[in-house]
Image (cartoon, rainbow, N blue to C red):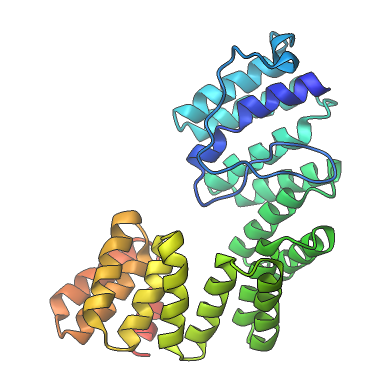
Length: 309
């Protein structure tokens, strides 16, 4: 079992390098699952690790996993998924299959096969019901599918299993805020601060809360604290929206430009630039940004409502 687990860790870790910002890859099994660091590179097949060196990797199970790794490298998610499914079928009783099913679900989610992804995350959880990372992955997927109560149930289960997990509390806070329960949201964000006073999730959550309440100056300050440490297109977009509300148009333009360099296909950023162009009375540019946002998935009704707020 230990040999098999070591080999599987080497093979599936590569998924993280490609699924930036998406579901987390499972890299261990048991009562708790660890998270692979973003950008972790797979280890070479030749290794001094005795648990890998003496492993017979010629079994169909590991041959299929090796093939999946090859297609993950080439970004061919459907074929990688097929090879992981073949691995599972080759040895359905293998105790490492919780990891295999989880990574199948991650690939399916990346392809937009959300119902299949839920099914496989759930099957993996049947095998390892205390797996925190699996619960977080499924909860995030439920949010994507608008199954909010199911997401809340999974996040609350994570809180029960791990009193120090901040991601679940942040997500619960955001969901509470979206449901209008700002007091619960603030309590959850303050709980994050108690767990980790320097947590970026605390500052981001409180920034969202202040933005919702119309305190755009304070929200921008909180977003800035996180951006200095770990900039992202999403955070830059939130801060740009605050700057627009404060009529700091040059600052908003700078944030939108940087965010678009990081995420050129994010429709929300084009909506923000449409707001900027509206404030500058540049109507042709505004219309172009509206059309781009629509082409990337936003509805015109949502855009018009946002522009008229």
